[in-house]
Length: 92
Image (cartoon, rainbow, N blue to C red; front, side):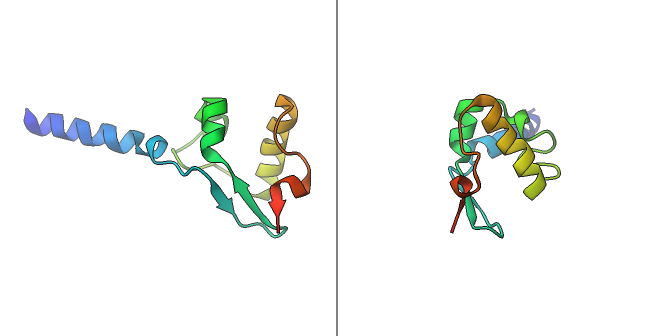
């Protein structure tokens, strides 16, 4: 019985580790200057990881320039908050 409890506990820790240990700010290299993404701030404001992460935790399916410009800029425009102009995200 102790082995089963230990296995369940390890699974729970592993399953929720991504949220607990997510980086505060993620630096994303881009051809037009580095983009600093305040991940923790987005977690606190959105409270819905599936807004960006629909697949495996920590992964964004199809992530890249086109995805970010459509989804990130689109969300910022829709919510009327956050950067929407090139130089507001891309810092040299």
